[in-house]
Image (tube, rainbow, N blue to C red; front, side):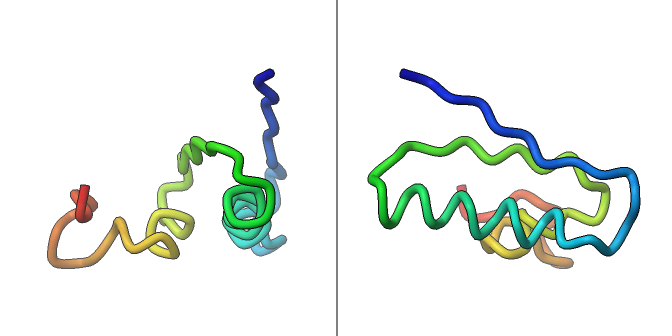
Length: 63
């Protein structure tokens, strides 16, 4: 059964990316769930935390 979660807040600096990243990692690591994390933040903090965004590759990552 699929479950959709969204974390949003218009205010900056309220740990949205950190919360999203940690929730995704927890679901994968402790509950063996498959997770699709979509990072629409222009800063790409969740992508950077997963190692998918660097200054050198323009966001292409290792995938």
